[in-house]
Length: 92
Image (cartoon, rainbow, N blue to C red; front, side, top):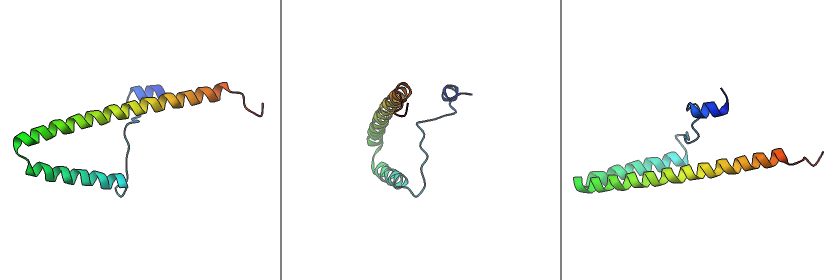
């Protein structure tokens, strides 16, 4: 398979980012989970529903932002490749 086919069939997932268990990201994620659990334990059912809607909206916002950043990065990378491929080398 070629790169485009791998993307099509989901063999390449550029949005997935593995992280190490002892990384700063993992520490922040643990804090977020801990604080969310603490907050949810203090809320009544109506407040939990409002919080879930809030969390869903922020997740959607982050998804849109990441998709836009990925797209812009892909376009910039493609432009760099085109520039490199169409520019004569200094040694030529």
